[in-house]
Image (cartoon, rainbow, N blue to C red; front, side, top):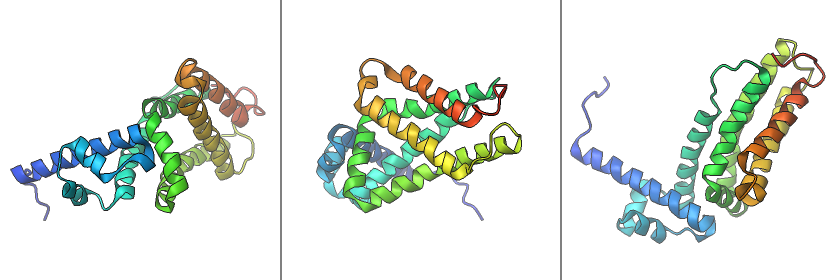
Length: 209
C-alpha cells in the first residue's frame, strides 16, 4: 500500500535543506567552476555544517551530477514546443529552448567541460544525459523519413551530427564567444535553424509545411 500521509515537519525540513544545498552547489559551480568548487564553499553558501553536505551528496562529483540532472530536466522542458505551422518553425522552437538553457547557465557549461576533462564519472554522466536529446532527434528523423519528407539517412548518425553541432556551437558562441556579449541567441538560432532545416529537408522540395 502507498503511504498517502502528508510529509511531517522533519521531512519538510529535510526537503528544504536539500533544495538549499542543491541551490548552493549550483551557485558555487556556476561561479567557481568544477575545479574551484569545494565542499566547504558549498556548505558555506548553504549556511550549513560541513557534515550536512554528506547527508545529500556522496562527493563533489555527485553534487555536480545532481546539479546537471536539474539542468537536464530544464533542457527537456525547454525543447517541448507547441504544434507549429511548419517544420522549420518546429525546428526553431526546439533549438530556441535548447539554446536558452546555455544562455541562462554559462558558468555551469564551463564547469561541465572542465569536469569532463577531470572526472570519468562526469564525462559518463553527460554522455548519458545528452543521449536522451539525440534519441528524441533520431526518432523525429525516423518519423519524417516515414512521411517521405526526409531523404534516406542513418537517423542515429544524423541526430548525433546535428545534436553535436548545436551543442558545440552553443558552447563556443553563447558561453565563450561573441554571442555572450553582443550577438546573443538570435544569431545562433537563425544559423542553426537554417543548417538543420536544409540538412534534413534540402533535397526533398516543398517540405516546409
